[in-house]
Length: 40
Image 1 (cartoon, rainbow, N blue to C red):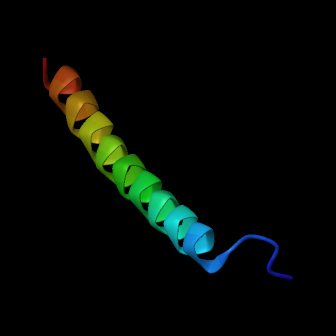
Image 2 (cartoon, rainbow, N blue to C red):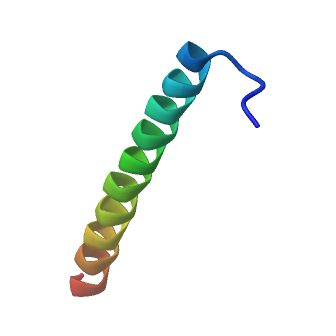
């Protein structure tokens, strides 16, 4: 059921992809920081 216009749906899809991408980078960054702090 497509309530929203197509433009909005594609825009929200881009936003979701962007958000997921940022989460991936953030998770990797946190892992790196944790490893660095463990070394100390």
